[in-house]
Length: 304
Image (tube, rainbow, N blue to C red; front, side, top):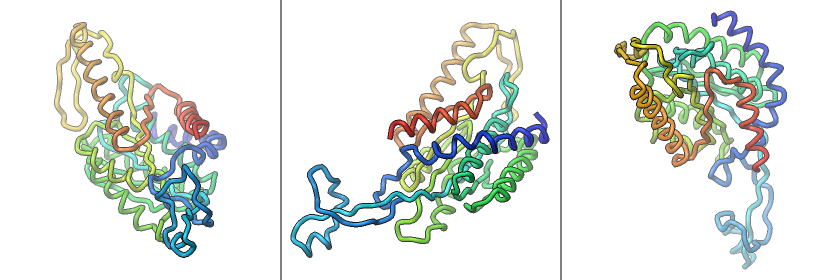
């Protein structure tokens, strides 16, 4: 899919984002910190079952009986899209879209949905370094500038053999969102991390970001991540290292080992997300991004 066709498809998401806008905010994306994303409202008497961490000790000491703080949820938040531009994302794996193209479509849908509901949207683009940063802002013009930059940034990554340093990108995202805090508790942020997760040393930085913000780890996959077709002796190339592999895809044992390796990576990704506190979502290059994202956010909305 060329750049103009991809941009044309992105603009149609302005309509599709209408239904997703409310679902985006209504899920269980609340920080582990009581004050994060919440605004103090009032105090009331402590009741059995209340979280002891919400006790207002100053008020309780003054009146000689326990009081707890009540908070009102803030509807406004910052949505930050962290998009992997590395070379491994620019493979199709037998699908009409490359991993990067599918990731960009997902980013566009999320950005338009957040903008429609009045949220600030920011972005961090990365490969082996952070290539571009957009501070969270409101407005359609800002969204279009952000997405146009992502399209332009992909050109060099597509041919340049860039690796990815997700840990550096996650640390940078944390600094970006921390710099935007203007109250002691700070506004909560929703981070959408879009990558194929073909990288190393990202586990701890992910946990650090999850400790402060709500994070969705959106893993881009493809048909080859599920099954290697029987095509005889084929040559595979790693886009990031240039390494060539002559693969006997006609061998049932090879195809089974291929599927097992990808399944292990998938299980590892899910385990890390669960332990670090990120919501895990898989999106294949042959999926409809609108359908998958709508189902995901709507499902979390109904579990609240």
